[in-house]
Image 1 (tube, chains in turn red, brown):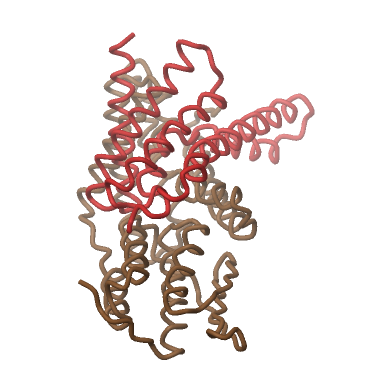
Image 2 (cartoon, chains in turn purple, red):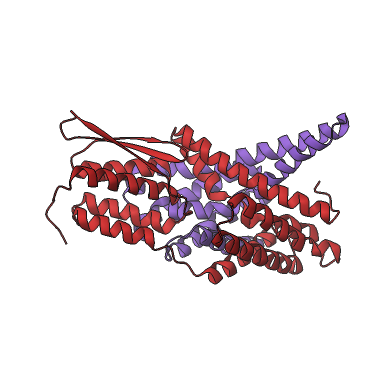
Amino acid sequence: MIEKIIEDALFAAIAAVGFASISKPPKRAYIYCAAIAAAGHSLRYILINYFSVGIVISSLIASFTIGLLAVFMSPRAKMPAETCLFPSLLPMIPGIYAYKAFAGLAMCMIRHDKAAFDTYFYLFAENAIITTSVILMLVIGATIPIFAFNKISFRATR
Amino acid sequence: MTTMKTDPDERSLYRFLSEYGAELLGSGASCIRLEKNISRIARHYGRDTEIVIMPRHIHITVWSPGHDDAFTAISSISRKGISFNINTLLSRLSWHIADNKIDFEQSVKCFKRIISDRHQNPWAVLLAVSAANASFCRLFGGDISAMLIVAFATAVGYYIKQFTLRHKVDLRVVFLICSFVSAVLGSTGILFDIGSTPRIALATSILYLVPGIPFINSFSDMLYKYYICALGRLADALVLTACLSAGLCAAMLLMNISMF
């Protein structure tokens, strides 16, 4: 169990650093992104696999933790909270659900017989709803700490 | 270092605020940060501001100190791409101005220097993105051969992305081409029966293209009630996701693989 969690944290950290590099963060942000993403993603892994919590609620809890860590680390790093926060959320963005939703929609346009249309419309709706709700929960969870500790979050670069 | 507060001439101040806003928003800052930074700078010079943020433009109205006159500056949001480094440095600049650490002329020079420095080693990013996507494949349960396939598919796709963007190809076309190429390469595991998780390799091979930051920014703006900008950013992210899905579907059609 412990090895699985450590493995999840490690690969989430590499994923966060790599995906963060696309959005050009300051160099010293990488270490914070890696640490925060590892903590958040492994927490979600534990919730989903060991406590049978659904992906939506576990994303909310994980992103709230990520938000708290980012808000309290950002003044130390002298960076806006988003610089640590947003790249750390990237490994949890439900990319596969997102493109499956579009693929389902595309199939609905092609196939018009009722049985096939029903199946593909269901796949489109299911994937679209999961994508939207997971991203929404990620952002709500991460934004609550920014709201709650407004003074810290917006004065980090002072 | 503390300097004397010198009042800039009106037009230079409006131009500076307007350009600052356009660059900050273009670098991927959220609307709430933009509003806070702009009003922080304006307050230092004794002005109040009102800001309207549209999907492609920002209108900044600056009131004169006695509130008897107002000027509006409109500028196009920078389209040079997301850069959290610029976002961080511009936020710091706003505090330097507010804390009276630099005068107006120095601020303008500092601003120009910040926005012109976008250098990043493209090979380092290519390597980091490939490693990241291979790690992502592992997180979804892919084995070592699936990870290697994803790393290769990502490296080729991302190289094409860098190359085409340098040649100013439309971003949507870039996403279409890159996802197609990465998905074709990602499907080699299924074609040649490599490893035990070839489908995971294909499913994750294009995930480096998912516009995560625009999605997050859009929902973040929505929570702070900047609905128009949020919808603009959401539309951008959805169009790019549609393009990458289309590229993936085309590749699967070519390789005769079904998605569901």
